[in-house]
Length: 508
Image (cartoon, rainbow, N blue to C red):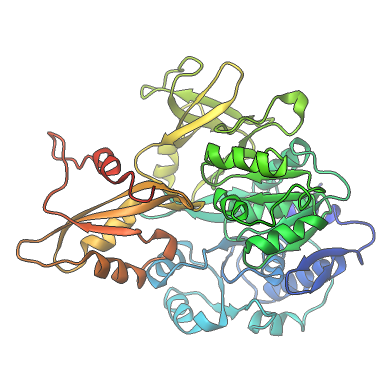
């Protein structure tokens, strides 16, 4: 029987010569394919030595490093479930994720060990290890004592490989359960569709705690046996300089905006590049056009979600059509995309409705939320993305908005209801509303509008400062206004569309 563990497929794609460079870091380190193989084996053996129950979750909140990638691959290799957590999350958020996922192992940075371990041990986690981006920490100290050979654990395509916490626009985060089959089927489709070829080199400039950097970029390079130039933190000049030795770059719109601000970005600087891909947030048509003009390259925009990995993509091959700015291209091979109205009926080409999807890449459901899972799927098995869009006569998909009030800021999802919950608990606050407004760098940012309780004196700056101690920085509203009332409809519901319109030009 074939082992359908995702790591088995990635390992099979390693080059025959394992001593070739696999990853070169911006700090001057070079890791060979043999290093990756041995490092993941030692970590997998460490995890197996802990005698963890089958299906155990390994929760990881660490800075970007090659060792952090090895830990992800080792978790797959050992047959456990990987749970990446954004490095910006603070104690309130971590407490929820650990309480909800009940991981058997938590790995954090050394500097956060004090507070993270308290939360983890209180929740019943047995093992808390540390990993830093300078190749130090108890994880590596313990892994080095384990053998560097490891037989990959057998897994079926339907077995769980990762849980990614996401959310709708209301309530607490939900854990999207992704299987080995979900991840591998999507990686194989993208390898073909994006024309990965021998000799390709990827500039890896994305964080590795969500779909874009961890799955799309990483799996793409590994499944092609391609070298990666590894940027620990995105710095525009470093990224542009790396392109003289690379062929593929993946980024969020913010990264493209920042590189366009650099005089070093010229046609000569990107002469050897084959492909620029953008996703995780809408790419402004101005950015799309300016990049084309400056570099001679047309950015390929695509669309995906935590629950589905990639769904659509503009074409790579010219024969399949043009790359159209403002669209996310065609459904990927094997992926179904349809648009439905509020009654679930099909809408004509070019008409706007709710986007629904189906395919081998679509997740298994939400962790321990069977009712929510049922709610998000139609009777005939299509996943309701919550995004609103249209499909034209040619088949190009355009996302025109999101249902409800989700804000995508710099590629990260921000859920107004969560932030409003924190603001509403503050002393003197009667009510709050958070809306997204356009921003030239981040695409969208949050703005908070707050009503004080009678007699209370509130200060917008102090409210933002208080939020910074509780929430990840990307969730913090850029401005906070204190007002006497919020616009409402006849049913008393806050009309957020009017708030968005009122503050639309704030950062123009």
